Image (cartoon, rainbow, N blue to C red; front, side, top):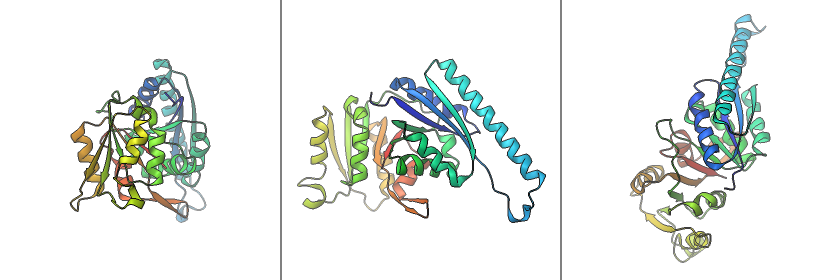
Length: 276
């Protein structure tokens, strides 16, 4: 596998499921697991100045909880017997993306479980720092009730854009080792300039040269949201992994995601690998 270092970002609350999922992924990949335990400090409100003891007490409790979560994550890694390192950061939201960026530079893959993703401020900062700034692929893991299976069937969401192309390249190891890969195009643009003579044929040929067993699925939306089409098709083909580009743009350091990206970030039906 090409993924030799996996960076797992976990929070300080309900982190047990997320760290165990990250350990599971690192073990399957035979990779070193780099754990980043984070929590966000709440700035005092205007009415709190001068800063009162209640706000300081909350910070002390937050830091204590973060240290406890990090200690439990360390124990879980030691029990699993995998190579790992661990750091903890208690920081403000404005600085978290940069912290993740600097750690993601030295990772091949970033993973996040559903408990950590439930905190939107952490989720958006991690995507900002890892996917947009460090240009690293991110694996979004579903709930603990859905184990990380061997990747036999992959669905590649394709629209002939740069983000989709980068996602395909980042996931090429998964694609070439899968039993089948479905390249899915929703309402594809049939113009030659957009998708070649036949939508999906170019990327299928590219993947086939890597030994990928590829099928092209052109799907009509019928006016339904693209994310719904992708979710339903992933279930129909029994996909173990969805690969897709991350779409959005920067606005004053806040990322604004497209509907498909945001939907998959918040509630992926199966593990989703996104890249920018």
